[in-house]
Length: 136
Image (cartoon, rainbow, N blue to C red):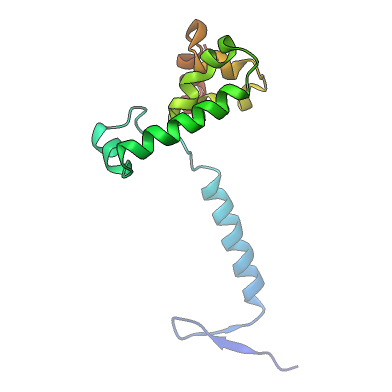
């Protein structure tokens, strides 16, 4: 039986049957590394210069888009009190993302408005829970 050999990068001939084995080892190594990677921020607060550099739109267009967002956001809620509870989330993307993540991991829909308004310091608890895994 004739065996097919390929030349490796180091110049040594290797059987073609090693290819699936190397692929399996590579996959296992990647999975081992990926399970150890964490998506937590190194610093919770953003530096002011990073915020100013990312906002490239003019102030007039920002105000206009904010008013359009606000109008559509107000229509989603039955009364002004409900909107006031989540107003901060509609104004700040970072707070919105934090509160949505917190609501998702706690599997409770009431957490989102409580987090947005920081009712009973819920936002502070969510920040510790979502970003650092602290449950107090």
